[in-house]
Amino acid sequence: LYVCSRLQYHKDILKIKEEKGIGGSKGAILLGLLPDSKLIERNIVAVKINPVKKLEGYVLYVDKNIALVGGADVRGVYYGTLTLLQRIYKDSNVYIAGTKIRDWPHFEYRAMRLSLPRGKLRKGETDKSYFKNFLRALSFFKMNYAMIEGLPWAVPLKKRPGLNWHDPLTLEEVKEINAYGNKYFLKNGFILV
Figure 1 (cartoon, rainbow, N blue to C red):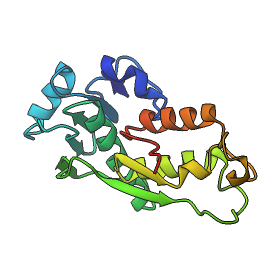
Figure 2 (tube, rainbow, N blue to C red):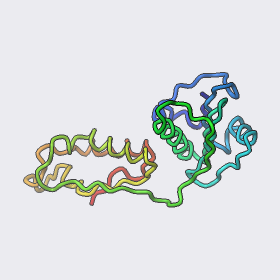
Figure 3 (cartoon, helix red, strand yellow):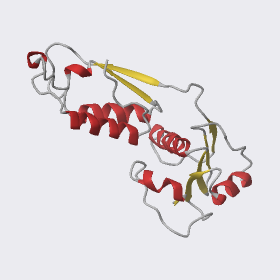
Figure 4 (cartoon, one colour):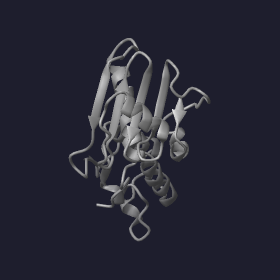
C-alpha cells in the first residue's frame, strides 16, 4: 500500500497500514492526491483514465495487478477509498478486478438530519457513542453535513435545569463529537436548532 505524504494524517480514519517499496508491484494499492503524487499520476496515465479535477472528486481503478485511488483533494481520496470498501462489502468475495470509476459530487451539501426526541428518551440516545456512530454512518454514505435537531435538550441548561434530560451531554462531549465529525469530513457535526 502506498499513501502519498499529504494523507498521513488521515491514515487512522482509513485504517491504513503503509508498506514501503511496492509502487507498481502486483497487488499494490495506491492512494494519493492527483496533483501532488507523481506515482499516482503516472499510474492513472498508464491505465488511460482522465483525472478528476473537481473538489471531492476521485478516480478509482482496479485490475488484477493494482488498485488505484487518486483524489483531486484529501476528501476525494477518502470518498474513493470508501467506494473501494463499498465494492468489497457488496461482493461476498474480495475479488473486484475490472473497476474503473470517475466520480465527484454534484451537490456541495449532502446532508442528513437527526431529530432528537423532546420527551422520554430511550437508553443510549444521549450517549456520545450514539452520535459518533451516526456521524460515521453519514460519512460512509459520503454525506458531508449533519444537522442534529434538538441538541439544546441534550446539553445541560444552566438557567432552566428542570428542562434538562436525565443524562445530558457536557459541552466538552459536544465539542468532542463535533471534532469527530470534522475528522470524517462532515462540515458541521452539530447544529444547535
